[in-house]
Length: 405
Image (cartoon, rainbow, N blue to C red; front, side):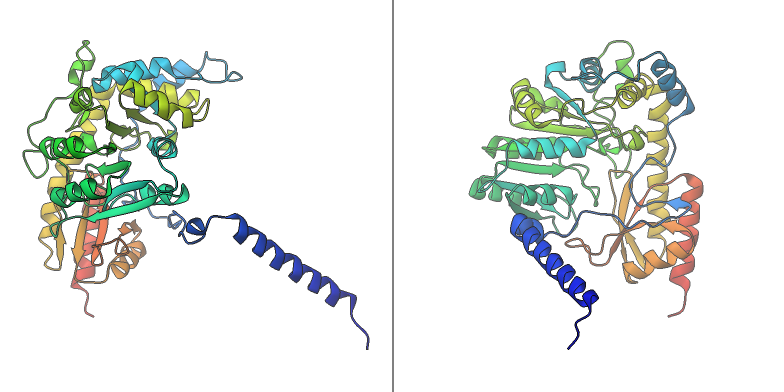
């Protein structure tokens, strides 16, 4: 019987493939193998309302001043090992101290760094659910255990349940996203202090959307303090409601922020962490050297300089559009929007969210289907767009929900 040389080659390839698969599965940690990748489908649309970005681009003045400052800098040289000047600017902007600041390549890098220095086998991270999925992802990769507390039925923080889990499970880290992604709820200072006093571990408040949060009304209302005083030397807290004033009294508190939302610099990946100098010194050990490129550093400094004049008006416009969008969506009988303190909102739908997503995509509008999140089976999420984008969304949703089955 003749045996084709090609069949031998195929057998060898199959053997190599099987060996490769066995080798990979033996090398990767079981919890990681079981994880679904953290990813986003590559859909494209003219009206992009799926990632909670600032619907307006960074103002031209910010771009031009950034490039002007960069043109005389040597591009062949590394950026600052530690961006001390940016740290000082961030400290003044946020009302904290320079040695209690770390700037990073987006706040995601800093989430990873703080979990790397705190979490391993046998360590717990307490989160609320639904919330930003990356907290669970990184904790699992590091070998930690995730303990989750559902939001209340009206999608607010269940502080009593959080307190109970903190006392019983004693997590190394508790993460509160406030305003919460994807629901937009905010934890009050009084509630946060209760958790801070009870916790033996760290409490992390992710304030990615804090500039849009103004407790006192469903959307806009009295503010704790604005960044308006930064220009004349007075410390500010960068806009909306914030936990930063609690840092001085609670050494177990960490605050995370980003330039990707209100600051309109998502493309440049800038985030920062505020904590006690002692904590910052330990977390910095997990931050890679030269982690923030010179262009991003410079753009962040310019954005701080121009926040009051160029970015704060955009924040106000987004909050006004959020009010209007809520009212318009609530007027569609089959939709129930949830009031939010962020630049997005979740909406309960009588039609399957996947279908709403698909119908909007046909109309060149991209939203986020969050029906796979805990407690959000009937929900989709929309970012607040420009007035024109919001009008297109409202018109399209009215059309979709008037369609006969």
